[in-house]
Structure formats: structure tokens, C-alpha cells
Length: 405
Image (cartoon, rainbow, N blue to C red; front, side):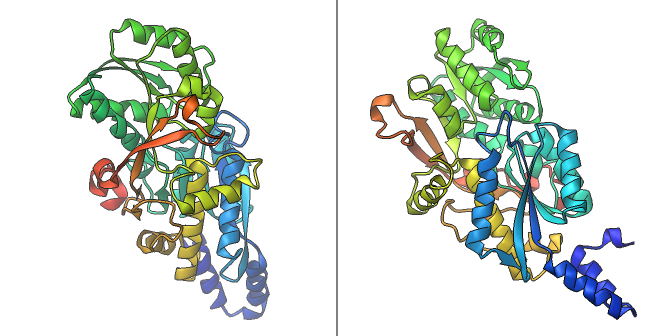
């Protein structure tokens, strides 16, 4: 019977039973326990550079900036390493909820892991903050009323570059796709975006996650006759693809999801000229610069990237909603999250749709030439601002069943 109740409703129900003498100490003890937020991330593997330990640091900075307490309890961030394995991630998430009492889970790294964890959390009515998973299905067909997706999804990533590329003459695309949920979603969204712009996708090839030698997919793409070779992969796979394309003299390569650490790994000489969409860059405005410098002072001067900042903003927003509601109830808190204004100043025109999709303006970034860069952190030139309403699907078109159930 108690499995269908939230933690706060359960405590209220227990408080009304005749054995008040026994229940009151237990309730007091429960309120002394930390209010825990779990981070289910790739802390040591393929995607640890664009998420990983710095996601945990960003969440903890948000807790500190909030005041470190909510509902009269100290807030604690607990992190686990899912190793990009869905079964490991699901098991660790279950431990965080059942054994550590986590009220919310921050999800990053592999989308396959994140989707498995979000499904578990949906069943258990636990809040999920999707900050480092880019598959569109988190706020689409796999959506949850207890989830918000802060990471830019594959639909926006593809849409931001497809139209200008096709208009510039790149009307025949070949896709190199990492073979799991993120890559599949990005390939599908890229195909739709290219076709909508008047172009076509003439072929694609899939490769396993963490493929060191990308020569076979690249040579197949070059032989296809495509005038755009689009990379539907990320992290080290993306870095290897771009580096090896340069070695083979392949110049018509387009990337769709790029992080600062990827550009650092490639080097400006190799990465220069790449264009892609971002929702955050450290040097955008006073708020982004102030936060980034604070974070860099604590992480050996590593420049924060999209996933890190989304972990900060989402954690802060979640705690503000918990405080506003005065409860840990996931349904009430997520309703408040969709209604509360944003206070951090680091996103442009943010709002949360009913399906949990966080909409914001995006930026088309271009990697600078080596001679244009004035410091190791000076990597991007912002080409234009793209209004969020131009790229993000309305909630009713997302495929989110929770909107009609």
C-alpha cells in the first residue's frame, strides 16, 4: 500500500496512526537525514570529460549557492559511475533511491543508460534531471511527468546545422552513426531536418561505441559521393572521426554534438571551422563568465561545458521548486519546476514545456583558427543566436504519451 505514496504523504499518513509515541521519534530521525540528490554519470569512461566529475562538482556548487539546506535538512549530492552500462546504471539508481533515499537523480553520459534509469524513476515517482543525455526520446516517447530534459536533444542539434548547410549547397548527406540510442535518434532527426531543408541523405553506416579506428566508415562515406559527411557520434568517437578525416584529406565533415573537451583533444589546427549548436559557452555574458571562473578555480582550470552547467542550473531550479512547494512530492515539485522563473541568468529565454523539455535559445558556434585564439579557453566564435521556438518541437508534437494519459 505504501508503495503508491510519496515519502511526504507516507509520513503524514503514519503520523495519523494511534502509535504516535513510536512514530514521532522515527519521523524526527528521518528529518535529520540528508536530503539526497543522486548523480548517475559516466565518471571515468568515454563521456567523463563532457560530464563526469565536473557534473558532480556543478551540482554541489548549486547546492552551496542555494544555501545547502531544504525542508529543514542538509542537502547532499551522491554520485555513482554507471560505466555506460544500462544494467549497471539501473542497479545503482535503485540503490540510490532504496538505500540512500535519493529524491532526485541527475542523469548524464550514455543515453541508453539514462533512458533505463528514467524508466525506473518514472515507476517509482522519483524526479530525474536529464543534463547530459541528448536523445530526443527523454522528453518524447519515453517522457516522464517527473522528468525534465535540460540537455539539447538530437532534434535541435540536427536542425541547427541542416538548413544552413543545405542552403550553402550541401544537399547530399552521408551519416556516420554511433550504434546506440543517441546515435539512432540523431541520425533520424538529421534525416528529417535535411529533407525538410530540401536535401537528401544518400546513406549511412553505424559503428560501435568507442571505436578507435574510424577509417572504414570514413572511406565508405567518401566513396558515396555525398557533399556532406555528418557525424552522428560524440566524445572520443567524434574526436577520432575528425582527426582521421583530416588525415585522409576529407574536408566536407560536419559535426552535430561537440564539447569543449573534444575541441581541446582535437586541437584548433584540426577543429578550426567546425560549426555546431550549443546552449552554453563560458564566455557568453557576465553570468556565464562569473560561474565558469568560480568552477575553474575548483577544477584545475577545466572550462565548464553544456552538461556541467545544465547540472548546476537544473539542481538549483529543482531545489527552488522543493522549497516553493514545501514538499519532496515529485509530482508537485515537477509542476512547480515548469512554472517557476529562472534566476541564474546563464540561459537565453528558458522555459519548460509540459513534456519536461527545457526550451531555450541556442547559439551557432564556430571553432576559432589558432591565430584567432588569445588563450587556451578562447575556443569559439558565436556566429548567431537561434531562437528556441525555431528549433524545439512543441510538446504536443513530441510523442510524449504522458500529456494525454
